[in-house]
Image (cartoon, rainbow, N blue to C red):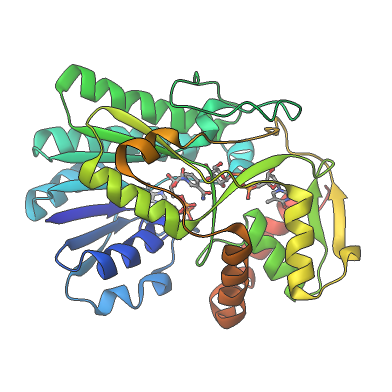
Length: 339
Ligand code: NAD
Ligand code: DAU
């Protein structure tokens, strides 16, 4: 079994590669990644030692390059993690989101068709469903919830999902899609809420909280997401969408206070800043389908997962300090300087 993992130098893709190398040692894994600001080869330094793993630098939207790679390697399955993934960046510069998330997905789908790949899996997001009201805690996203996007990021991801389903219906391409809630864990880029809190709190810097901090996200430990994708890849039904989430809803301010308390840092670091444009209020996944069809359940509680994550950031300071001391400084100043 040879699988192509795109975007494997990023947060979830790299965790998936390590999960598969450990749990499916007979698989050959090729990672294709453009190494954008979010991709980091250091993250894959252990994987690169493994003879079952190979790294290829390239752009999923470069059709000629992708076609050549598929001719050389003969993949059985493809898992597409590669994307521009940060909502705030999509509000500043939507173009690259359309290019990578839509055109890149189209290029992979065409290569899968041409080279008769037996499964294409699209890693999508709960953000394609838009948001839920804060005062209706009885409502959850199911796979039947209509697509209703808020940001250029989520609109680009929804477009990719629609294309993927169109290739199933029109060309019988064997596809699956997973829509997951907010992940956290090792190798999470410090522009995202949890690693941003950890890295800034450890440096005794202010923690920017958008709006009133009462927006809700449904947090899932990244390894649970990786297990779910492996199950879908192996046993998911073609043409189906699977929601992934752990019933772990928290307000942003709760998350911030929990992390500060574990780190022994004062709440005076919290700084309320101007809200995100179009900020989704609440995400909450109903994972009943993947549970009943594939037997998946999250295994890591938020309490255990956040402890493990904080420990990882404490044990791997060099990984995130290299990032925040580089180009990221300009990013932070641009996004938060006048907020
Ligand atoms: P990330 O930003 O950490 O990593 C993205 C990776 O894709 C990087 O390694 C980057 O170099 C690579 N990449 C970007 N453009 C590329 C291109 N044109 N060609 C090849 N590689 C390219 O993202 P992440 O948080 O790991 O998310 C991975 C996937 O999971 C995305 O599709 C995202 O939409 C989805 N997702 C993320 C979350 C979350 O909480 N982070 C939740 C649900 C779904
Ligand atoms: O739900 C899945 C999605 O989760 C994925 O599809 C995205 O790729 C991923 O980035 C994530 O999107 P969010 O926008 O929910 O994640 P982010 O970490 O950017 O923000 C989480 C919440 O915290 C959100 O309500 C905005 C808020 N926030 C974020 C940052 C970066 C702050 O209050 N302050 C901040 O500085």
